[in-house]
Image 1 (cartoon, rainbow, N blue to C red):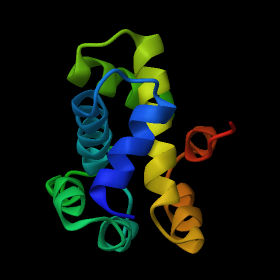
Image 2 (image 1 turned 180 degrees about the vertical axis):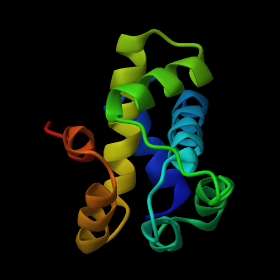
Image 3 (image 1 turned 120 degrees about the vertical axis):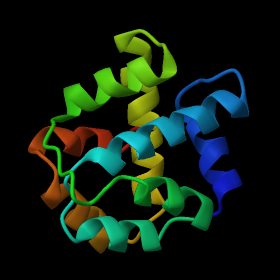
Image 4 (image 1 turned 60 degrees about the horizontal axis):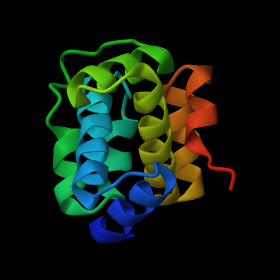
Length: 127
């Protein structure tokens, strides 16, 4: 999946007014995930994303391995986007689910295994 398609899907799922809002959301989610301990899955996940998005995920210092749950990710994304928690939850869900759609199913399983169980609902989109 190319970056433009990812942005378009996030805009649609997140019911966002502009592609810039969708882009900002994807970047905020990836920058937050870059801080999260994904183990060796970080590189495998990044390798399946478009180069410009993979680079954002790779920015996090692998020496710093934070552990946080999905609700903390939503709070961090809200702060990054200067959004309410409700808006951040919708936007985070839209972006994370599209990113999971952009990689192979086996990779989705491995990323979710590296995260706490509460990330799983964010990985899929109904509707």
